[in-house]
Length: 252
Image (cartoon, rainbow, N blue to C red; front, side, top):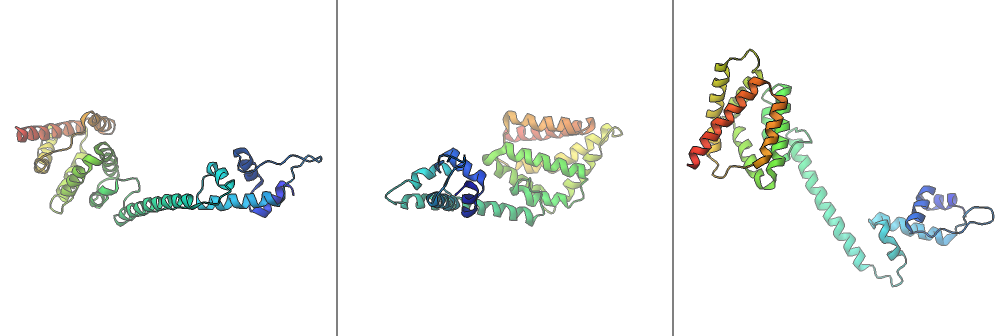
């Protein structure tokens, strides 16, 4: 039979047969006088075995050893395939859990799932699209820079600022921060920094071992410089200074 017929009987494409030839799982027959390759029923059986192994998850490069084995002892291979599937099922189960958490809070799929419940609080607080986007971006960056070791601290902080007694105050301050611009006075900036520090300082003071991003913190500064106007940058710098002084006083 020719390649097209073999492909039809085996439920594959001619291109797939060529691929099997290239990687060495199917011997390529010689061409006849008519210039066509002539396959037989043994080739069909070989292709069917290849398809069966592939359906079980056996990689093509591992197939020759299985296909050409004479003892039929496949227990070890089946155990290995079962372990691989169990690992994949566990991974997919975790992934479904993440998706469920994001869906529960109507969160964006690219947000850190651990922060989804808290970001949802501010998403419903009426922040402008620009401020909401800044919140998302910074959350993604902070979660990455904190890593697994620092993530518990980040979660605790977001949890605190999302509490019913604090979240409305923070949302109002963030909104005022978003309105800072060329028309803002020094008093506007100073007042906002003072009020913001009064809200955040107790939260920072609660942490006996605050997160330290080290040199990576400069990435947050780069982000701020890129998206904030001059007045907002001044307010952010003032807030960082106030919180830094408070932290230093606690350590002293």
